[in-house]
Length: 325
Image (cartoon, rainbow, N blue to C red; front, side, top):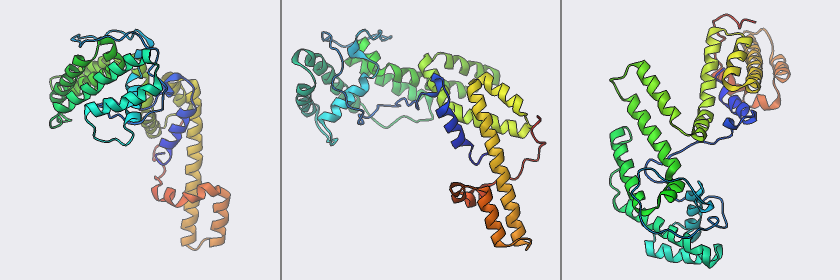
């Protein structure tokens, strides 16, 4: 059932209810996210008095006001794109000057002060990060990646207060540290398979609930496809499939996946029937007109558009016993 399962699974997950299906892909920057265009915003939020000074704290403080919302990184990116829509190579001073015009259209004077101060330090931070940039670390070396992570975090701490740091980079840090730990665990030859699995599970539990949900959503299609391959190989009954899927994904999703099973079996059966008719045509058992009539009976016009490709990729019927009822 490998012909159509990825697309069918994606459709099922899109329809299924439950918050863990709603997350999009998660991507944590290995070095620094670029300031790509993001949906426009009219402001950075409700402003509180500006706070000056760098930080040297190990643990960022909680976000305390509406200015420092978790999407602050993207709202800053929006303002930087508005100030430099063509992506020109500007000096920090030139970029700050352009931001002045943007500030005038986005904020009243009393609110612009805090946004201006934060954006100024953000530009200085990016300049400092660029100044220390060298050859990128080996992506397969967790020690080199951790060293690069710590160097980047130190630069960030020099430019932002704890609560600013958390709003700007807290989520990235969580994912980067998770991925670094996973690489270190997987590369630790001193662990037994059982110890490695336990360490990976413990690392997974260290993620916040939103990130765990997003990871589950990202991994679900491949997990479901692998589970289905195992079902097919073992001849698992529909009832057993439903029970196992319900325990993992919920009853509604299990019902939808059961319908996918039935649709796929029907599709595979029609392909087999048509392939047998093609073989009969080659052997002289039927004529082309009869084959075309069968084609029209078995497949919709849309299905006929991909029929040739499906026949080329068609897997032979499983050699195992049919699913137990």
